[in-house]
Image (cartoon, rainbow, N blue to C red; front, top):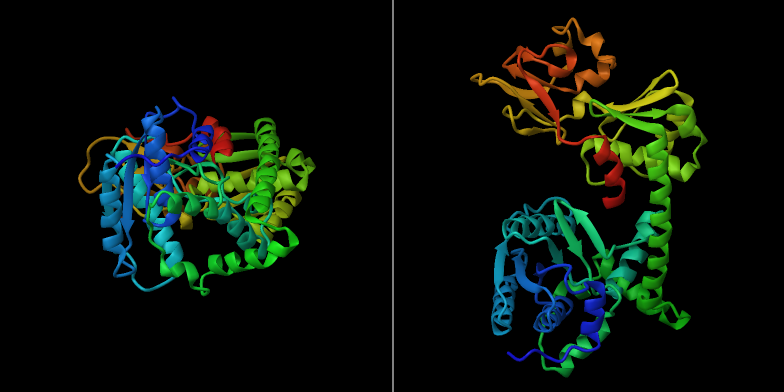
Length: 417
């Protein structure tokens, strides 16, 4: 297939992803207008020296037409001379939030595929309209600066860099370009189903048009808010450098310095520390976080997000909560997203939390300088009910606990989250 002339849209794509940054990258294509346009624009850009797009589609199995739509994307990719991979998800059990489950599966499966293919990033077809709709949905939930910043042009999550190079382009622009060049696409019936919040937000955006509130205008506002967010992140990083240190996976904060911070920076620092310790995708938000911040400044212990906030004199120790730690794993495997425990080969040995029961077998635990509650959430080696080793509680027995992340990661991850 001859590539459709793409100017000026190709220029906007090139501006978002300058030549030379990537040689290859994944492009997620569902068959809808936005992602089909993204595939054709990347094909044209590649012909002019841009990165090679490698196409991937996911059949969620939620509609009978889905398999045929993925097959249609495969044919279109082949006509453009592009490689295509079809993924399948059949994980919906009829419970919980369908849209959220499908979204999580999409990112997980596509991310796994991209890593396996040696691709450094995956481009998505989100547009200025998607950005505006996301803003309205988050506004309805009373989101703060981070939420109202909506979607980022780049985001590192689940071990993959996700790109949204069309966030400055409207849905109408893409469809006008597709129609002008005779390129077809599929309209998902869920795009007119008002039971979904996004579709209601789409209708609200149309109703706001007479006031001059457009997708482009809202997208511009979110861009301003992202600049605000970036400034707040810089301030939070400076506070983390000045007031915190990481000790055996715990984050220890100067309590008086924490109390002196502006409320927003204080909440951000605590939220990041709790997310980092728990290994969670997001930190706590809202009233629970505000209460924990007040408790921390007042020297009152608190439990939040699978973590403990323990005042220690002039410091505040944030550590993992033993009851929230992960299930047992074999030695050498990553446990609780925090530790790998290495030692002699012993049949039946497994790694899980030390707990209070294990601490009773560690007479030298006080030499660690850490409180019992923090040590209880540390990794230990067990064989049934027999404690074999607790490397962080003074009972090494030839075993070592290696942290998966360190203090440098705590600081740098402020910028990439």
